[in-house]
Length: 393
Image (cartoon, rainbow, N blue to C red; front, side, top):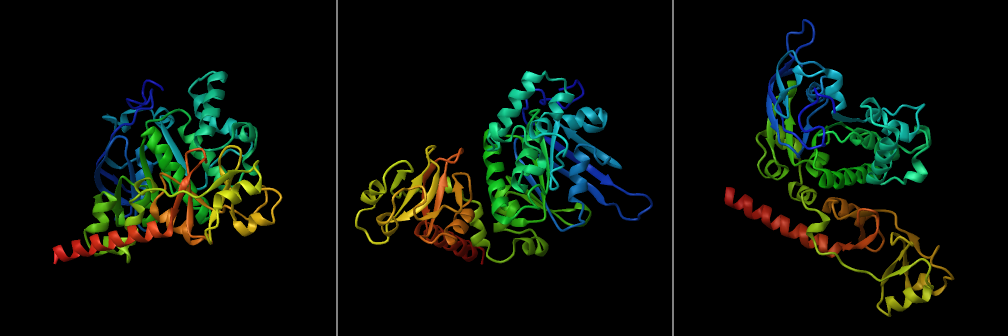
């Protein structure tokens, strides 16, 4: 990075962000849009700003990379005052992903991802290598997507490219402004899972803006619940906010079913996975039928040649099948080990046999989570919640 970039940016190390009495006023308006916000965003954490539309959360975030200039106060990034840095250099050292994606329509996927590295003077070989690495990181095959244009991508694929572009120059800070708000619920859940996986690998300092409290609970190491003028109503871990909302406004965000929301705090990796019989798509249906045995209602999974789950099959399905390529029914939804138990519950509810398929980082089969496991976890959470309520009383 340039000499004026925040410290830590050259190697992509995460940095602390500190806001000190940050205020934004527009024109002659009596009330500021953002009023004296002070907070510390720890290095390497994902902090979510959540609040109603118009409360100032996006304005607050945009002041971090000076897309909006503060009227007063200070923002320190890695210990350096952002106002003392060259704005262009600052923005090149901070990844930025937005709801509308903002890909350049006349550039290919590869050219979009390479924009910031190109501005930083990287050579073509290094940019190409980094682009291929980023595509792999966000789960897109380089050979398939490298030369495509944005119009040839689905909404979810465009968002993945947007995240890849934001990460391409290995910035220490990533700003995300409702990046998944414009896609369907299933794709949104998949993108959230992908972000959690990436953050576990990369450990960036991420500021994420949303109006969806469930999304905030799922993603955030900490949540800043904001009111009008970005007043901080509560700034704490998701667990603490769910257990002890600071006031009635925060309690309104938490809503009913706080014990069920605890499922978004637990990951699939926190429960013991179950196994179902599996067979490769290249094997005979009789191989899977033999593994299923004679147990009534038994179901198995067909895996592709990369061990990714593709179809469910019962003994009845297999009895009349000549190939595993089209037997049974397709696997519609899956979760990975970083997914929340709420995601697993949603997948279970859409599955005829009451299972959520669990995959590894590249889609390989890892196991399943069954409805009995989830119900047992929910009972434990409810009992813990009741014990806490009893102790508070």
